[in-house]
Figure (cartoon, rainbow, N blue to C red):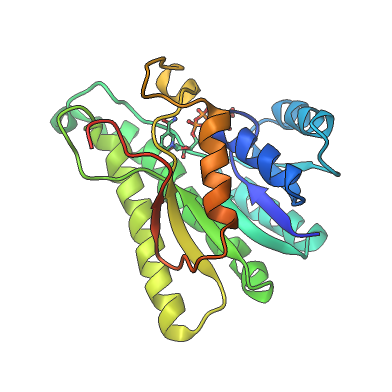
Length: 233
Ligand SMILES: NC(=O)c1ccc[n+]([C@@H]2O[C@H](COP(=O)([O-])OP(=O)(O)OC[C@H]3O[C@@H](n4cnc5c(N)ncnc54)[C@H](OP(=O)(O)O)[C@@H]3O)[C@@H](O)[C@H]2O)c1
């Protein structure tokens, strides 16, 4: 059974991606910062018909949990074929970029880039062994008048470079791991205060698009795949 690890899988888009992948036959491991929230999500995934869903505690701001999660997955789940780097935070979306606090920038970079990279690096030997794939859930980072959150875009920009740079190395070296970005488009979740508007998708709708792209047979190395364009684009 193919195994997938979805970070931030206890709620929002990550939970729906995990659910839909599981319903298509993947064995699912979710990352959750909190053990109780992880167990509650796993119970919901079992109720949705998934076979043996699991959680590991993962806080991308805490290197110890990143290394421990990778160790547990590597020891227990040797068939891991897919890492979905979904966990993410928006940072301060209101303050004008020039007034950003260093703490907000550092905290957001830590989760969306440093921690995400550290986890990817720690799981890479297993993904390489299994000829696996890494899907980075992200956003386009060209600002426009309607959508220009400095901290969020800066951190996701770094994550996007991680995709394109590692993809280039993998292509050049013949490394059997595919890495690509998936932009879901606007989704009503806790990340945006569950914003309701006609252009917003539900997490379930967006996850259907994300899972369709992830499971497609098309070559995806280095690609920036979109379910729906960002607001203002
Ligand atoms: N919503 C959108 O419109 C939209 C659009 C484009 C891209 N995305 C991307 O989609 C992804 C999922 O976002 P979402 O909208 O589903 O947001 P969400 O509902 O707020 O879910 C975010 C998930 O990330 C987890 N998380 C937060 N901080 C973490 C940390 N330090 N370590 C590990 N996990 C952490 C959260 O766990 P807790 O429950 O513990 O907080 C939660 O499981 C993000 O990468 C986001 O940038 C979202």
